[in-house]
Image (cartoon, rainbow, N blue to C red):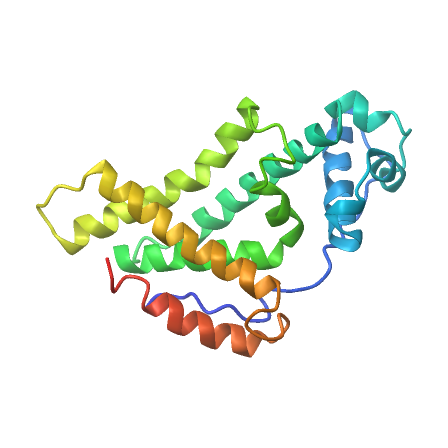
Amino acid sequence: MWQFKLNLDSVKLHRHNTVMKRNYHHGDLANTLVESAVSLIQSKGLAKLSLREVARAAGVSHAAPAHHFGDKAGLLTAVAVAGFALLERTLNHSLASASQTAEAQLINTGAAYIRFALSHPAYFEVMFRPELINDQSTAYALAAQAPRKILKQCIREFFFAKSPGHSVSDHQVEVTVIALWSQVHGFASLWLNGNFGDPADLKLLDKILLDMLSSITLSL
């Protein structure tokens, strides 16, 4: 039986309060600025984010963010890269059990994606907004592909397990990635915006996810 229930311990829908480093080494400044940006997005909203506010929150000179990232888009690109790295770790953690079936792995991957989105809404808001970032950045392109590769592998293994001995085309995998990604991403966005009820109602969240994720493979 797969374990995908999201409860109070695994998902905390609260403000992301990162402890800022006031005494940092020079090499940590970029990460400190990213953490400051994430905290400000969570507390004040993305629209009000500015390099000056980020510098103030990090306790550094107002020129520091521009020195490291160039402009606001450069800073948000770094936020997105950090978010994708965190998402990749979350997905890999969901696959850590070697005893999982291919179906359980696929469902747990979907649940982990939703868990990430609900636990880290500031990252989630930035990561998929190419108009806000430098989407031509090599670092961004590599980071964004990593979670997608995990999902593609889970889907390929699911099809192999479902029809042993049958080939699985790249096209079949790709269209399934789009379908399932759209489902979990859309659910996370709708939940965060309160379309299914109170976003803090974790019992309701568990019930909806139990029904939705249990049926996710029926049409494949």
